[in-house]
Length: 102
Image (cartoon, rainbow, N blue to C red; front, side, top):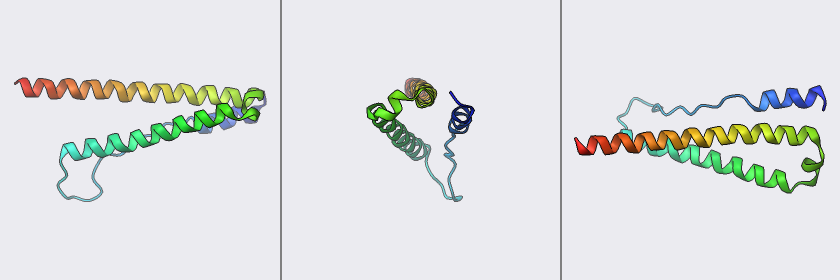
């Protein structure tokens, strides 16, 4: 494995955050903000999934240790993102259920 392969992985694994604050000062409901944030994260997650599926079918990626390592790192990041989205969704549902019971 070369040092360049590791350097590329470090650049590829930078954290990404979604800004759910409104672009203008108009009144946007919390429901709309959450829906838009979920939609954008859902699209990004689906795109990442498609990348993994195409990378696995590419013979060049399967035979290269550097490419396999990069794929493993990206897959780990993807797994963490999906777990965070899942946990936040569970917490949001629990919060709404609690508010509706009150």
